[in-house]
Length: 119
Image 1 (tube, helix red, strand yellow):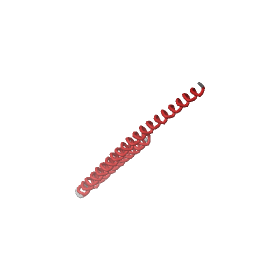
Image 2 (cartoon, rainbow, N blue to C red):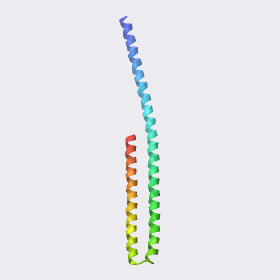
Image 3 (tube, rainbow, N blue to C red):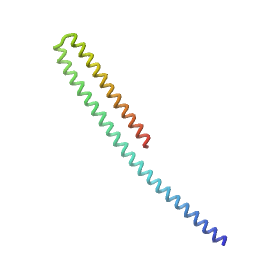
Image 4 (cartoon, helix red, strand yellow):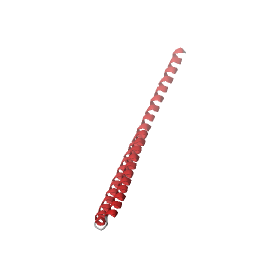
């Protein structure tokens, strides 16, 4: 009877070990799937951030070109006082572009932190 009890205990222990292995394998599989999903999501976010940055750069360049053309045209026709006012307005516009750029960089940094937390 003791031998039979030992055999039953051993079988029970082996079954528990097999169940633990099965659970660990399933958990590993789920972690791998989630890791893949997060990697794909991270790639999408990085691509979107890069596209947004490129668009922002393109818009800023267009704005600079428009301002330059307008500046060239205006400076040819305006007085010294008007030139001073224009220079101040352009300095304010440049400060605004810088603010927008910094805000974009901060957003990219936050998204990077979000990705780090997801990983």
